[in-house]
Image (cartoon, rainbow, N blue to C red):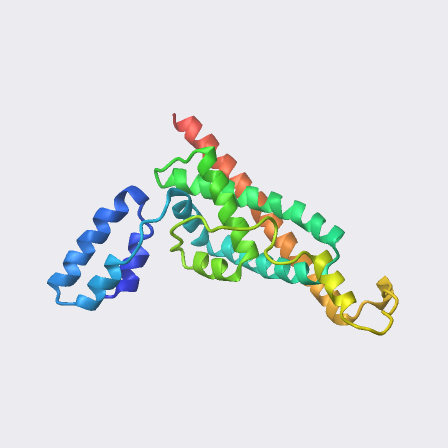
Length: 224
């Protein structure tokens, strides 16, 4: 028995069905004489409702890929942009997260599991963690997240302003004059272009997600 295949099936189930299904798979593995698989399956943790909803979104390959691309670009921006630019991007990323969370809520409804605004708020927290933490992003991309990760406001570590201050404090010789916009090197321009493209793609994905969610709502209302 392949424990990874079992995990793929288990984490697609609504949380209320998870424990019973997992225990049944453990029994099946033991019956087949596969003690190692039985131990692995028994160690699978039941996801919270918010984690399960976010996992539904992770399985939407196009939207998930755009969010992961945006995450990488924003983490790079956090290291390179000035505080004002990063605050502007942070405002934009909140709109992207809200749109994707709405889509996740629509997917949950389609799966027969409507969720409350408080759960969607936790889904947004998960998506913020995906943007901020590459390890969370990697785990979320598997579709097997089990709980809402802890995340600091915006991004972990020092702020861009603190990074600049530390850098300026290190050299003992006089600091060079700040470069003008024209003096930005090719690598900086490339980073900015990449970030712009990632933000545009993610924003479009969030808008499309909202449109699809509105369509699902109208269809449900007409059906009712």
